[in-house]
Structure formats: C-alpha cells, structure tokens
Image 1 (cartoon, each protein chain N blue to C red):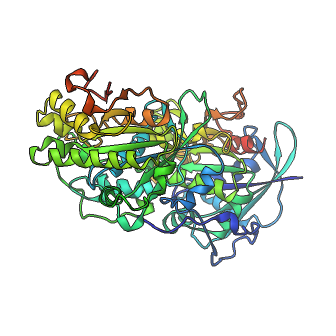
Image 2: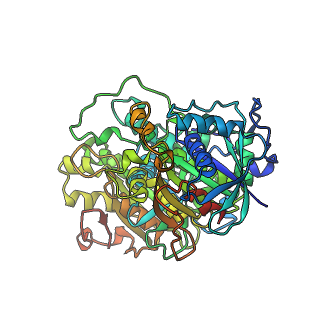
Image 3: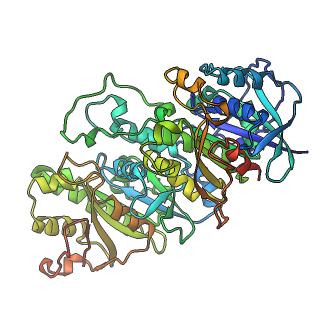
Length: 311
Length: 283
C-alpha cells in the first residue's frame, strides 16, 4: 500500500505542444495521479464536489474487510455488477494493488489479501458507479480500509477519543464477523463477543452521525455452511451474542458473504451484490429491540441465504 | 484554416503508426473513399512519406522509439463540407504511455498533447489484451502457479485497467474539460470473424473499459471503430496484400456512439474510409 499522495497535475503547468519534427528529444516528465488509496485530506477533492456515501467496514484483523471491498471492485472487471456500472475510481490502482495477491498473474499458488497495516491509519478507496439504466446521476462510494487493530482500540481503551475520523463520517458502519471463526467451536464465542464489544463501544460513544446505518456482515459463509453450523446456532449465537445488552434500540441489517469461497461451494463474490446494493440504496432495516429483555424464541430469520434480516 | 490537434493514445503495438501511414497515403491518393483529402503538401512531411512508403511495401513498420519526436501535420479538406483543416498529430511511442503508467510520470509531450487535444484516438490491439484471472477461479481447485511469484506494479494491471488509467489521467490533465474520443479496435481483421462489431468486442473483451466509456459521455463522448489499417497480419500476409489495390486494403467498421447526442452519426463514406474516426472528432 502506498502512503504517497496523488500528485495534482492541476498545480503544474502543462507546456504547449512542440512541433519539433523528427528531432530526438530527452523527454521531460509531468507527475500524474497515482490512483492509490487516499488519506482523509485527500478525499476532499471528491467530498467537496459531490455527495458521497462513506462505508466503514470494521471487525477483527483477518475477518475479510479488505477482501470484501476488493472483491466488489473485481466484479466490475467482468461487466456490470448487480445493476451498476463502473464509472471511474480515484483509487483504481489502490484496488489493483490489493487484488494482486488473488490474481493468477501474481504467480501465487493460493489467493490471499495483504494485511492492512495499522500504522497507515485510515485509508479510503473510491468507486464511482452508475446504474445500468443511467436513470440517475453516478454515485460515489468511499470505502474505508483500516486495520482491525484500530477498531480494537475502541474496545480496549474506551476512554480514548476514537482515532477513526470515519466513524463520525460514515453513512454505513458494517461490522464484519469472521465466518471461519464462527465455524470453529473454539473461536466462536470469542469472535462473537469481540463483535458485540465493538458494537457496544460504538453504541455507547454515540458518535455515529444521524442517519448512519449499522450492518452485521458474516463473512466466509461457505465455511460456516461446510461446517454444518445450523441456522439455530447462527440465530442464537450470532445475533444474540452480538446484540445483547446494547443500550437503546439498534437498527441493524444482517448479510452474509463468501467473497472468495472454496472452489465450487458457492459462487465467487457470493453475497457481494446484496452488500453493494445495501451500501448504495437506502434499505429497510428491521428494528431490533434490546435483546436482553426479549426471549430469543420471539425472533426469527426470514432466510439464511444472501440476506438475513433481523426482526 | 481551422487547426485541430489530435492525441493518438494507446499501449505499445496498438496500431497507431500504421493508422497514420495509411491515413496519409489514402489522403494523398486519388481515392474518393476518404473523408479527408490532403489539400496541399506543407512543412516537413518526410516522416509521413517514410511510414506510408513502408505501408505500401507491406513492410512491418518499426516500433516508434520513445525519444522520437514525430509530429505529423496534415493540411486536409473535409470531403463532406469542403472545409480546410490542419491536423496536428504527434506520433508518440506506446512506450511513452506504458512508462507513464508504470512510473506515474508522463512524458511532457504526451501530457501537453493530452491537455490541449481537440480529439483523442484511442487505439486497442485485440492481440495485446491481457485479461484478469483469479487464483480461486480455477474450477478444478488446482494450486498450480504460473511460475515465480511476482511483485505488483501498475503495469501488471489488466489491459482494461491500464486504458481506464490513461483516460482518467487525460481527464485530470485536462482539468475535466470534455474531449471527443474515437475508440479504434485495430487489426480488426483478427476479430471480425468472431464479433459482430467493435462494440461487441469491447463489451466482451474489456468490460471495465466499456462500462467506463458508457458512463463517461460527459467527459469522453465516444464512438467505436473496428479498423484494419494494414489489411492483414505481416509478414504472414505480405504476398496477398501486395496484390491488393492499396486504396481498398483497409477496412473500417463503425461501432456504437456514446454521446449526449441522441442520433447516431454515420460518418464513413465507405468501408475504406480510414479517415472516418478522425472526421468524427473534427466534425
């Protein structure tokens, strides 16, 4: 990942074309944008020009935040995705860099995602998308890519001021829970408790902007499926463990994904279309009352497919 | 006389110089098929004469070198309107753009041409397209690698990403000033048997670019062309090509137009009108 800021060619004077035919020249150079990920300040040239939707995926290190973001970008390499077309990206090569370790051209034997480094703080990835019917203006998404360790600080040091500017700017906060850990009896309770604590830390701080939406995204769904974890376990342990004892009412939407599933288990990018649509469009979310006061048996899931909506 | 500066944009071996060579020949020949006729011979036209000579001899044109500073100037007459136009077309090496992608620094000649261009000719060679593929897409689940692991660099990006990179950079250099873009799928004879037209080829072979062009009509009103400027692959087809009248060696297939204009404009005078993509820019 680059920490360098994109160059601003506007600040450089572009010389008039020369007409010095066939004379060998020693080319001078002009810096051009590197299309890498953006710092908070570097997003201003987007946010000051037009409305954007800021999405903040949070969760443990390795839960799949970067993989989810990168996989959604990669889908556009194959054509319009979920009714949306790629209309540009100020972080085109930031996406490419992140996707590289999953590409055959990298020479790797297995796909991987490079860990996001905590020292880089919050980095933003940009996608400009337009609906296939071109009925509405293009929309801009800013996706936050930050190390899970930064979010862990929210839980470990609750008295600290949050170091995440994006927490206050986010339109959508997506709490990712690692499906691989859920599928594993040893890690299940700890990962769910972590998710609960992160949600609780956010909830208690009351720092989300008005109208911000909360999502719970269970990643690596194929591994849960393969482990034979039942719907009851998903219901009882994921939702209740994460949401119990939260103060006040919480609107939360549940989704499941398998961005890079095991071969032939579920399609590549499983659930990513629903996630993207949920980021781009206002969604009807169910209201979840404080779970501690409500019997578990009163809450059911509509489906356990792509979208699981809590009631 | 109106002057129009054009930028020929494309990766190495995309067919830029071959197009220019054939354009010059057809403009100076007696054919009635060309949208542009060379009105008068002015300035230093030695470069144009040299490349069109090689084109007529069916000799593979040498790849343009990075340091060469070939700027073609064509004083032409629009065959439809009779208007005299001076075309200024720098013939920059594809390596210039490739190095720009790799180093994030553009040759100042390319940057200047992009910033001030009145039209862009974007060249794509179907034989040079690198499409992305993902490790976990291997259906058999095999773990076989393609060789030693390689570090990422911008130049490792798929062709469609590199082309979007070029267009986005042009847009930034122009400070968002709109510019028309003729998208030329070169060596069209290679793709013609499989695809109905350049629009279909781009949609299926370079979907990310296709999406970008579809959604960028404010900045890049565009029209697609399939062009066979050489007439066939060299040196394989040299013998056959030498037997063909040079005026009908080329082929031009028009593709979809994406612009704010509702009506699609038909610009080619005939299937041999190689100047059609240029005229679409200057019209």
